[in-house]
Image (cartoon, rainbow, N blue to C red; front, side):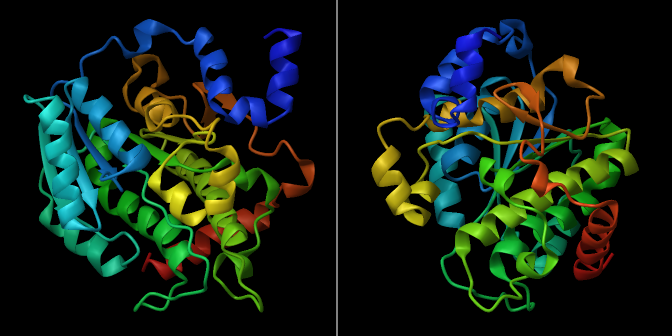
Length: 309
């Protein structure tokens, strides 16, 4: 990487924006995605829009059988038909799944009988008020952490058979956060949706690292997409979108590393890493955000307890 690239990356803006993607893309290895995923089964949560839709379409284009896991069945059906309209031979299946509800995760897994080669934990929310699910969990925590953890654990036997991969979509916002379990669970006097979201994204990275140690036969990865133009960004961060809409990445650019992590053959065994634009990056560029081993163990114990582990 040249001095100019290093300077632009240090700016964050010119790294996370679309110019950063296009600059980083010059280093991509084209053959990584010149592969066939025929016979591979991929599950994508939050597949009806944004990064999930873009990743689902790209993985289907590579020949994978893609299962779209969507909270809203009508939107999921529209997404499936949109992909099929562009890829008539795509192997697509739709399932209703609200990952914020652990009972829904159990229902889905009990009814899913096929193999799993890749699980993409993409679904996420950023609410602006503190709300709890009917199971008693703060919605951001339930959607972004507990549901994906429960889904990963329940599908683990299938992933082990396939020596599969789990890709979790996090966010660069977590770089500013040190793990705080009370904030993560919504046990706060004043709720800040952006902080709550970033806390869940920090938790996702830590959990992926722990999964990588506990289950070395499955490749666990997290990635952050930079700043992408998605419906979630427009609705959850309207001020941010207003000021950055001219420089945001396309959903396809934001999802590129998801597809790469799911498909590139040379990534087998490179587990527990955080990726950005197909490169492994530090999880703690700001040293004050580093959690202790006790914090990590407490997080694992919390999610295991909350999900019935």
